[in-house]
Each structure stands twice: as C-alpha cells, then as structure tokens.
Image (tube, rainbow, N blue to C red; front, side):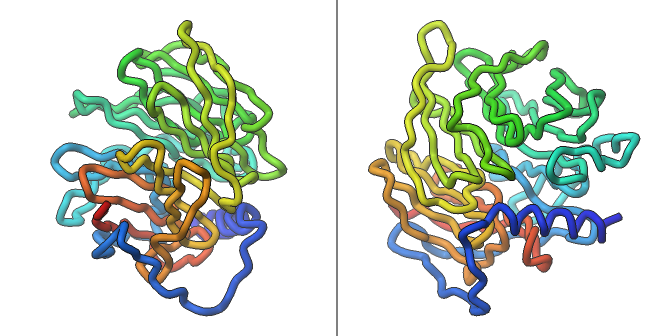
Length: 321
C-alpha cells in the first residue's frame, strides 16, 4: 500500500512545483542573519507514512503533527520522541476517491488554549471528510462534515470568535466552522483561492483581524479582510512568485512571514512589501517542507519528503531578528 501511496504523493508534489527545475546539486545553506543553528530535531518513518503535513505547538515545546500518509495525529516531544495520539479510520474504499491525491490524509492542525486539538481529514468519502477534534485523554471525533469532493487542507482558530477556518485546495474555498462543531459555511469562494489545475488555497493563518491564505498553484499569499459582521471582505494579493508555497507562519514582526516552499525544499522570508528571500534550504535538512510554526524564537519546519522519498523530518532553527 505504501508503494502506491509514495507514487501518488510524489506525482502530486512534482505537479505542484511547476516552475521548479531539478538542479542535481545540493544547494548551499541559505541561513542568514534572520535564522541560525538549523538542526534536525526528529526523523520520521517514511515506510509507515509518517510524512508531517502540519504542525501545532504547545507551551512546553512539544509539536503536534499530522502524518499525512499514516492518517495519524502525533506528539513530538522536545527531545524528539514521537508518540502517536490517534490513527483515523480508513475509508471503505481505501481512499482512492480522495480528490487529486488518491489517498486519505490528515492535514491542518491547531491547538486550543485548553489543549484540545482540531485537525482535518480528507478521504473522498462523506462519512469521514471534515473537521475532527481530539480532547486530552479522549478519542478523535468528527465535529463538522466537509464536502467529500474537496480537499480540506489548512486550518486555524480565531480564538476571539471561537471560529475555525479551513481551506479547501480543490474547491477553492475557505470554510468557517464553530469551534463547538456544526454545519460549515462557505466563508469565501473568491476566485483568487481557485487552483489552476492541481491545488489552490492551501495554508491558512488568522492575523491582525484578517484571514491569510496561500495558493500553491498560483504561488501567492492572500489577505482576506473580515467584516464587522464576520463575513469575508476584500481579497488582497500580498505576495507573488512563491512557486509551490504551502503552509506559513508569522514571525511576530508585523506582516512578515516564513513560508514553506514544497517543491524546491526551501523556506522563504516574505516581507510586507511582497518581496522574498530564501532563508533555509535542503542543505539545512529540508525535504519538501509542508509547514512552518513558531513559538518564541524557535522556528519549526516539517518536511514530508514527498518527492525526495528519503527523510521526512522536523527541522528547528533560531529566529534572531
């Protein structure tokens, strides 16, 4: 089964990086004055489908990750120990109807202040696709169904309003769901969220009263304002030219972000004016990074190794600026 999964995932990642050419050479480290001391904090088991898709951080330094190919949610302790918290049920058809990718996968994850974890599961089936919740000591439970024809991907929680926002990379939609669960609302279907043939809206973060979204196919960073009544407002394109952009995190300095560039195995610093520069590369341990998370001055980058097929891992670096 993993051989089939590996082939599917590799094809998907290659298609996503449409403007990236293989160089055949190991790139030099791009660590600059911004980041220092990059290191691999944990290696994951590729043969078991432990390809980290998204990260949520806890105050004690633990990282909660979704393992896409394993259908799992796991905790990575500060010393690199991995403990699987939940394995979601496989769809009856094995997940072959999961849009675009053809295998079931766990994707976005977010942690609430009380330790509750919310995460997304895409299977191509109506009984499993949607938003899931895992409380401490409990078992995973789906709290909101999302369309089986879609691919829920990025997730964040607006703690002020108790609203979960999720991207759908196939349907070009941002969904909103009450944190208690219930019927989702198509919060935005703006054309800027649509794919151009593979995957569109991808990473998502709530920041400074707006919903920020990346579009993998278009290589863009979008800012969607939130109106006073909670509805989606105007969409602004804040950055372009970021081929294969996946998830991202704000650095804590205004609108500056660190973004994972999947196909090129890089992390880019994207400035408020839309310009960007590469700050981590494969030489620092990245292998098709999918997600970035930040707590304090520690940057966490999850690499799924979708294309390299070698070493899915978790890279840490220090944010100096």
